[in-house]
Amino acid sequence: MKVTKIILSRCDSPFKFRFHSSHAIRHQSESIIVILKFNNGISGCGESAPRIYVTGESSATVVQIIQHYFAKILFDTEVNSVKDIEGILHALEEECFYKNITAYNSALGAIDVALLDAFGKSQGKVLHEFLYPIVKQSISWSLSIPLLPLAKIKEFYYKYKLLEYESVKVLLSEGESDNIKRVHLIRSLFGDRVKIRIEANGKWSVEQALSHIEGLKRFNISGVEQPVAAGDIEGLQEIRRRTGIPVIVDESLCNLSDAKKLIEAKACDIINIKISKCGGLLKSKEIRDFAESKNIPCQVGAHVGETDILDKAGRYFAMTTRNLFCFEGFSYLLFEDSKEEDFRKRSSGKDTSLNSGLGVDLAKQKLKLLCSIEADQ
Image (cartoon, rainbow, N blue to C red; front, side, top):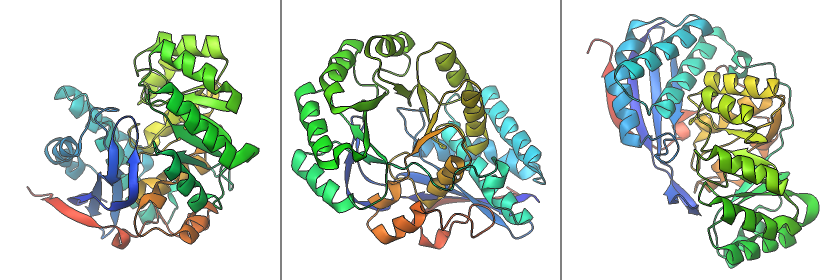
């Protein structure tokens, strides 16, 4: 089977409420949706959730890379096996190296998911079969709590308290006293039934991180995510050594080379794999397998505003991950048309094995066409 057409669309569906982190205030999705159409009538869909502060990509650069650099390679190759997909992804990376393009992971990830989706449909296989056998029907879910005023945190809690999750991630600012009040409230609301970890998005210095952690230890913190800037390996090492709190890396880790460097330097206890930032499912699998060989757990993360495409890809990945720490799969709840009862169906795993490929209904996505590329162009 060969790609005959590439359709690039933008999804900017609005959120129910603004999601405030130390990086940005988001009020809608900002994903690029890729549809690959093949000569046998099958199509596959993928999604890029670009973050300039993680992989250096924007929506515009993702579209440009796929349109001007990836398209020709996709049109010139056949897809008849997972090995073929691996070869295509390697050729796309080689093209980026040749053109001196260093920021491409999210664009590559969208192609990876779309190719696997289409190939799964052609073989009548569910996508997870290309990753690993399912090892977890019951996933450890985690809910992220954005930077909200205390009154809004209470509203957030009462709205979602009946959903099933085992842990929460609290996004924090640089204001230590405000952060202590925020975590204190969250612990009092959620009680001891959930684990609480904190997230700094790389905005603290080492001394700020040490001071914050010391002030928050009394709330039984189970981990700190990206306390210092992405490249500060020595800072991560020092925080691990001086606090004894598990360190989770996110912005620091976008590929297998990053994982090897961080793990071998003993700079982290847990790694956060996001399908989009790590270049897709197959590259995420390489990272996961290496981490497992070193007894390092994996948090399967999600960028804010991911659509059903990355949500389901992430769930399949989590379900096939033996060293799973938790899965951050609540992005769906942000959208205005989401319903809590639909999420309960998702969290039970009842909608993950009904179709071949990825099993996503694109008719439910609100897409705006950006461009369409034909094979003969």
